[in-house]
Amino acid sequence: MAALTPANSLPRVTGLDWQGVRYFSTVRQGGVSGGPCASLNLGRLTQDNIDHVLENRRRLCAELPAEPFWLNQVHGIEVADADLPADVPPSADAAVTAQKGRVLVIMTADCLPVVVADGEGSVLGVAHAGWRGLLNGVLEETLRRLRAKRPRASRWRAWIGPGISQRHFEVGADVQAAFVDRDRRSAGFFVEKIAHEKWLADLPGLARFRLQEAGVGQVELSGYCTFGEAERFYSYRRERDTGRLATVAWLPEGR
Image (cartoon, rainbow, N blue to C red; front, side, top):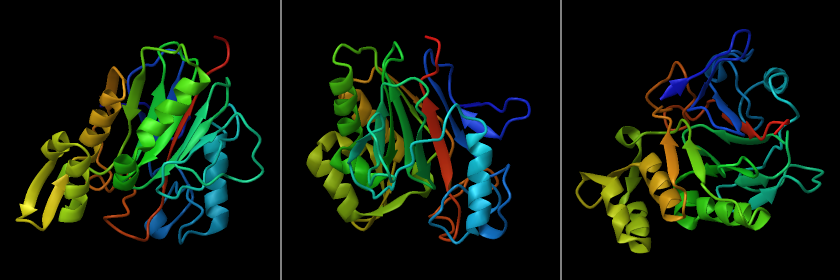
């Protein structure tokens, strides 16, 4: 687990240094929103005052090399190509780019934000991975699209940002069964809470497992739990009326 807050910058969390990639997740401090969305809520589809959201986004954008490539996230596996023109945010839960300075962004409030790139920093992807997206293959689809853009890319690496931890992520027997039916090895990421009814799911562990199976050699977990750290993160499971965090990533110029 690593945290980074440069002087005169918005509070943020990030992981290990990554050659050719810049990335971080916002936390809930540093903005102007009040109430349940206090203070750096970046989600437009919340109960927050839209003027507050826009000011918070302005503050985020002031720290980035360009306006982010926003998505309309729908808990699916569609991957948008951020290098193609888009008049409105596409309905997708992941995005890829091979363009320097193109900022990708994922919004979360318990689901996992995942950043993926090759060892040379020639191609980059971000994905929004809740249990539905993980089950149906959003991470594998993101990697497929990255490899299509850079067929010779290698030494894949990923960072799994702040999300809900196993201790707090209760799911029904149907969710557990769906994962195990797809791959029996997934059973190791569930702990039975109520016999045959409720399970605790290790979402970050499942994401790391799926990434490694897809050929990502280095996967770093942030170690942050959005549900358990109320002072730092928003959590939809903890309180439905809440804000949204952003995870941003880009390939810097000059390489």
